[in-house]
Length: 199
Image 1 (cartoon, helix red, strand yellow):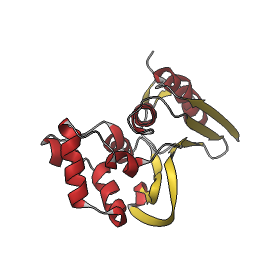
Image 2: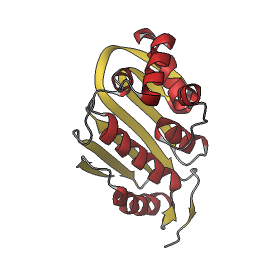
Image 3: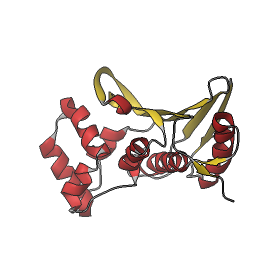
Image 4: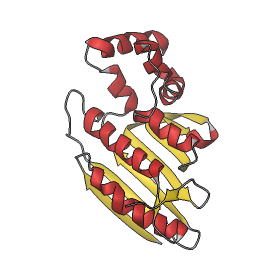
């Protein structure tokens, strides 16, 4: 096995290409296009850059760790930041525009004990739909979930604040201890969808 770890504060769109090449060569034995991998990486980098620190952008590092299991033809990913976490970020959105509507909606919808339900609604895009009247797909958490539904990634797990969510099996666990930050893990294996490599 080979484990690579990278850290940054920026949204590094160029990182996806070498990670995709390395991953596809481990899993499929040749270069393949992995659209879900690129989407997940960009969404997570944007989330850390925009939301990890309240009212400030680009303050927190994110870490990406990639484990190549060549024998079993799979690559495991961990993306981590030590920001405020998903739920703390939502509670502290600016009181203006659509965020004010979202804060009002969320505060009336859930209490701290209902974070598992809130995370599910976020992943399914329901909260954005309720607040804006527009269906929300392809960005943020719904975009990451969509990559899983399209079988572009497998074994998706999310840990933030007091919730661990095994997204692939739809199992939510409320934790006794708080985790300040966001931890996301997923796997790409030979059963995941991929496309011909085109330069």
